[in-house]
Length: 127
Image (tube, rainbow, N blue to C red; front, top):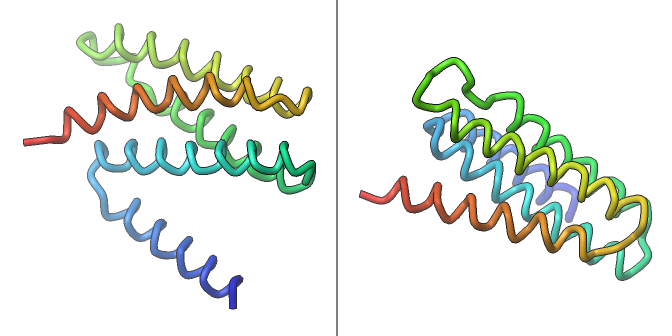
């Protein structure tokens, strides 16, 4: 039953992402990355190394993807894209170190940075 719910949730999220605006897609990606980071912290504390690795791999995939879609072509977006690229690259490094050292403090830093970015995205989306 849990597997069915999990599969349904993944399908529901995929559908929401595919039908969402670009702005909303970034919000959803950040939300999902934060969820994986929180799960990884729990798995580190519980010493569930396989699940920790899976959660960290998913968070890293999202961070790498978000870096890959930054807009360096539009002159108005270059400064913001450069800043986000730096933050995402540092986040990737911190997540990797958390994985190697089983240290949640690295994930705390990433969660703080992503939460601040998400807060900005949420503000932009408000009417």
